[in-house]
Amino acid sequence: MKTTHKSLLGLICFLLLWSISILPIFAQKDFQKRLQTKMILAKDGEVIDIEEGNFLLTASLSLDNKKNITIRGKGMDKTILSFKGQVEGAEGIKVTNAENIVIENLTVQDTKGDAIKTQSVAGISFKNVKTAWTGKPNKKNGGYGLYPVQCSKVLIDNCVAIGASDAGIYVGQSREIVVKNSKAYHNVAGIEIENSINADVFDNEAYHNTGGVLVFDLPDLIQKKGGNVRVFRNKIHDNNLPNFAPKGNIVAKVPDGTGILILATNNVEIFDNEIINNKSIGTGIISYYMTENPIKDDSYYPYPTGIYIHDNLYQREPVRPTSKGRMGQMFRFKLKFGKDVPHILYDGIIDPKTKNEKGELRDETRICIRNNKNQSFANIDAENDFKQISRDAMPYSCELKSLKVENK
Image 1 (tube, helix red, strand yellow):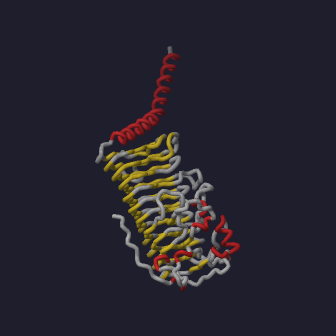
Image 2 (cartoon, one colour):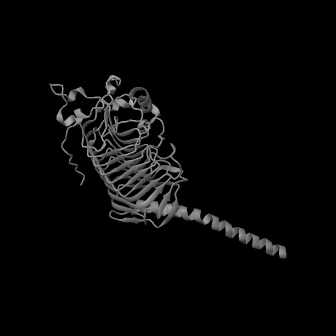
Image 3 (cartoon, helix red, strand yellow):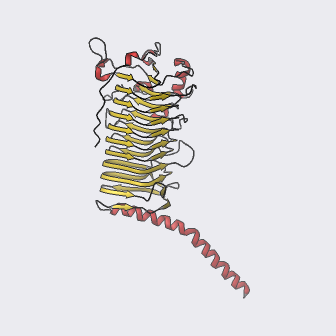
């Protein structure tokens, strides 16, 4: 009789412990199902509230063909959506074919692919949002943290991006963009504006990335020839993280120690920034030819033109630049700056069509550099195999009309 009681008591204890152990699993699955159902059934103008807590999800969340929807957590570090065990989909949250969407007050962690991707959205705002991969920087991390592409009226405000194997905050093929009051660190690229038109990037901090801020135009994309980009009042410092992008990605070519890199973009104004302790390139101005990738897109324009760099603060410790990758080889065997690396590097590759009958560059296509504190410069003459490297900035001491960016 005693044995029966003990056996029964043991069975009850086992069942109790078993029920407690599986309760979180059922609760997490129920949370995911409820949240996805809300997104599917949401009516235009609705607020989708997400409670406080750390939730483990196994599949992407999606919102499609909606208008005036807000997805709102209880706070950046209070509502955490973790996709560490993700088995379905790649993104954490994906929003498509929508209008006037707000995502705010939450964190998305450890997605298999991109953390939050929005595509073909007219009016997308990220406010107080964090994206992160919680381990050490790793090429297996997702490519992008915040990832609006082919969108318009983009606002990224007071956000944090950590650990992306491509870009923490990325805006691609979009128009009317504001990125402000945000932080990006431990990414390959902290903040990237790519093939986009009318962008303001200001009052951000980009640090401990491979490259702090990238303004790129690339071939083979739907939206061509981005530009009219302003980067100002940012703190861009200590971006010396070894590059961990997967091979084949364009950002895999970005040298560690890059503050700002302008690649083949037109009409870019860089001003009032603190660009400090980026060991290889404080600010780089380069054509697509420097990537050494073939150009198969006949409509692509590979030169940077209309670049105005002024009133920035530059500082760097007297250390050697990167020794890794193609740029490391150039520093070692071609440029030979030692520890005295100039803050501003220009590849010197010029589109001959931008010259007038006198052989001078047309005003609107010039590279102008002036009034920067601690300014130092080099034209590395890449077009002529680095044969006539010049550190004379006087030919570039000119002024361009300040840009007016339409992003309201």
